[in-house]
Length: 226
Length: 244
Image (cartoon, rainbow over all chains, first blue to last red; front, top):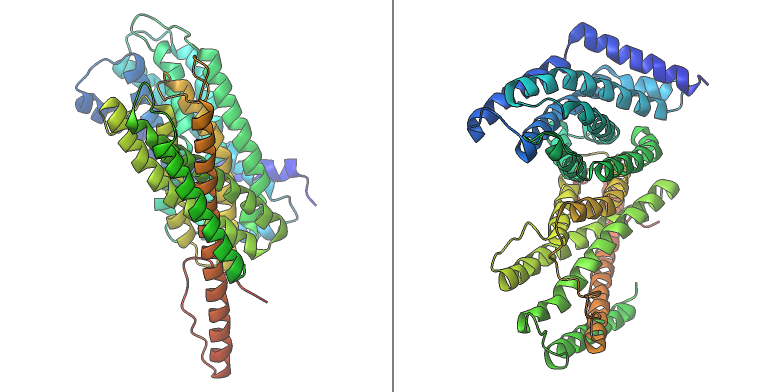
């Protein structure tokens, strides 16, 4: 039995290498997000955003861009027989879950590294709120990756996989979005960042991430049985 | 469940519901603040509580299915969630009526409990397209259980997050500042809650008896068809109970 740590590193490395060579997910996610900003600019008819409007635009865009990535995270395994190989390999199946969640986490971090500064350049006048925002971004990315990996692995083996990911994921991430938007609205305020209930919302994010990390870890094995 | 027990359960349900709503209309005092329209509380709140407990019970059955591999638990998980979704429609409709009567709008976003319930309801509505998109029956049962567990864990988290995001305007009838519910209202509410709970249980049992029967029929049909060398069994979308 290969240790889970080794299997985890191997799958993670494989996925990151594939993405670097094929560029199948990340460029699409970034393009989608930037284009969405332009649509919001005209949809809302604003050239600057602040407060809850800024938080809403940023998080909605990131959520839908994340869904693009989540949709594709298991597609290569499904199409190229990766699932069968994992089943045959002498490794703990949760290594696949952890590795895929880590891949998704990295995708989301890279996405935000490009998209959040772009958002600031496009719409924000005061950038001071972006530093504490990093904590929220990490919390949300963690939630997206543990939950997105679980949902994606459920959807990829069904007939309607592209349809099911957004359908299943959107209601599930509502609490995550509530916490993220409520925490970032005061940070992006036009009068400068304030920390209204910032700690409470971080706690909610942490609790949410913790619960779904445990759920995902506990049930993922059953999704791979055949 | 035998027919006599099903009959006894139906009679108990009817009695509790008639007594409960009778008490609600003719015995409980008028609400000082809301008047007659407060009576919908005796229908709306029990429906919501029973639906939410049903969703959670579906998650517990999902866990039991994954642990034991027994497809009976998958069937009960499906039935629990299915009936709670049906009750959920009633919760949203009665909630909208109450909101219209109390606040003048069919939908009130500031009301966290109703909004949470809508999110939970939408979440569970995706159970059907998800379940039916998986063809292999064992896999369908396993994936549906994983869904039931994930969604079950989501319910309390969602209520917490939505509650925190809103100022509280939903009537807090059990713990208001002036001492809470009068005893007559509490008793009536409990009778209504038991009645709605029994109704849910009764529908679960009826549905289960139906699944059991259709499971037996399809087993017999398979036996017949394998005798005549023809094995085209139509694919079912809802699970049915296989009996050995």
